[in-house]
Length: 256
Image (tube, rainbow, N blue to C red; front, top):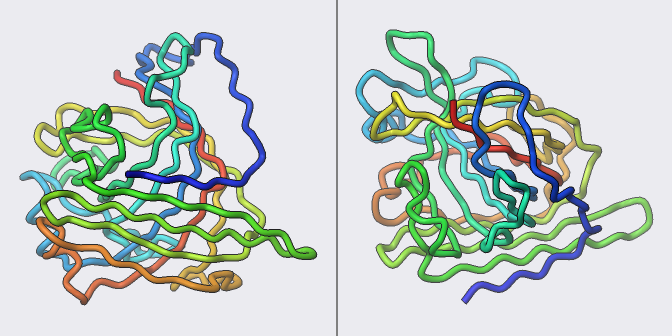
């Protein structure tokens, strides 16, 4: 059974119908808190999970340098349909694995979600048939203020009946988020001609990074990821490259 303990200021979201700036069709909108781990995992094991004609798009510089896989833990605080009405399962927790990708002989770039676990059955299997309902899941988030320091303490645990598990404990001092966002195409691994557009506005707080070396705000950290089809990716040789907090993440999902 999933449990959530969240201490944070409430986020107000207008429930009026949402429009988009072009002809894209809005599928849903969500307001989230995220914690993301960027990894470098074995290249061949990663390529084996991608469809023909696609490969990992690995940055040569910047905070995402050498990262070929992202594990993204999500506390979805609220979700809304295209009419602006709350979704029945709008508030939930989930985790997914995304690979930054590009065509081997073409112009398309974006990401692919290759696996994910979710607390709620309504989210599985999802648009790209990637999600499974977790047999066990829990999430705890707490915020503590002491003087000028604000510390987040987060525990995420997701386990599938088939043995896959994605667990992380991280405690970090919050920094000043950088406002960002934009549009990213998420391609269907089974049929890359199909895709969704994730349009986001977000705040990014890089709490630790192996390349750019910002002030290291991570106080405690441990993870356990593997089992099932994840075993070849997380075989003990993987490396964590970036620890990223997204204290706010406003995401609209669109189809062309």
